[in-house]
Length: 90
Image 1 (spheres, rainbow, N blue to C red):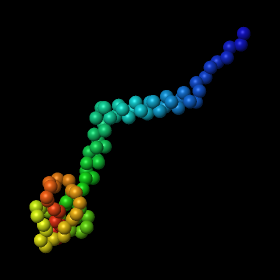
Image 2 (image 1 turned 90 degrees about the vertical axis):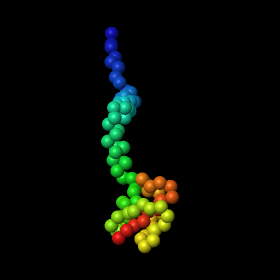
Image 3 (image 1 turned 30 degrees about the horizontal axis):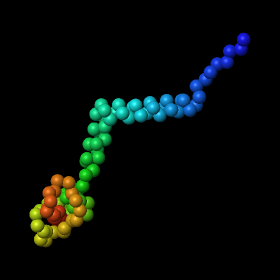
Image 4 (image 1 turned 135 degrees about the vertical axis):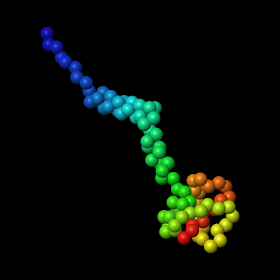
């Protein structure tokens, strides 16, 4: 009597590898390791000060109203409330 051995198909191996990768990602997300990534993303947020320094000014000053002798930066900046403008100061 001849016995034929069965082997695992390549499709089964690929599906198992994908399932393992998904489990690893879920483990990282639910154990709080994802916090490291989110902190890095938060550090890249644009503030008035960062925007002004990027164009060559010494600092940015959020004010209500308008800018008198300094340059006005348009856009939405983190940490500024409604009605404030970003004034760049030399």
